[in-house]
Image (tube, rainbow, N blue to C red; front, top):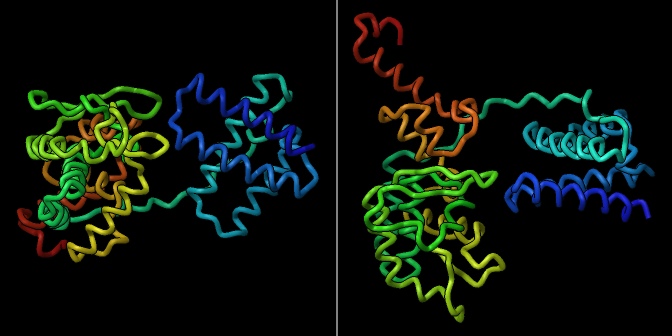
Length: 306
């Protein structure tokens, strides 16, 4: 009975996130997963999430810490709880928000994993060797991903009309359904043009599809899991550690390589679709390295400092 009651509030909360905030399906699934796990904790304590106290939440966060869960995952779960209780308070389901006194765990500043320019070139060259339909599709995906730095969810859900020969930009719908323009170069457009000639191979019984990369998946387009699997298979062929290759790593490579070659941080922020510059600043380690090299190469006393 408790579980059903709690589930009702959570479902209403998730419906609000979709209707009012337009959050992506992956984000909604993450909220649902986190709140379901918190519900299980409450049930084990004989509690109801709708009436949980600040102490109950503190015990839960303490359990996550004791389970050696990473600080970033703890912070994400706490964020879900804060949003959930803010909703319950706004809907007058409860008078207070017990999560307000809780603070997010401090997260270490982990530098993003990136590939070198030589490694990305090797991946592209290895993909281009395969001229089958699957090879042409993977080459197009890889070229577009590295040329634009799209999120994997944005890449696989590109509309068929998104890449046009005479247009040098993509109109991308990102988080919160916000649109942004991202430049796309000739190699990526040429790769997509070559892939479009064999695109019908992937319709497989579908009469038509509005997606650039269609498939018979539930969404109607290529899944992120399948793309991730193909990139790891490609990495093995290229002689690169597959654990170092993923769509997100290539997004990091896009940003880092731009900055390393003189791009402006704010321009990179806009292309990545970051709402806050502080999110993009994780890539400033590249700028630090570049400045260090400049001083090392040209400062008269560099040999005494580096």
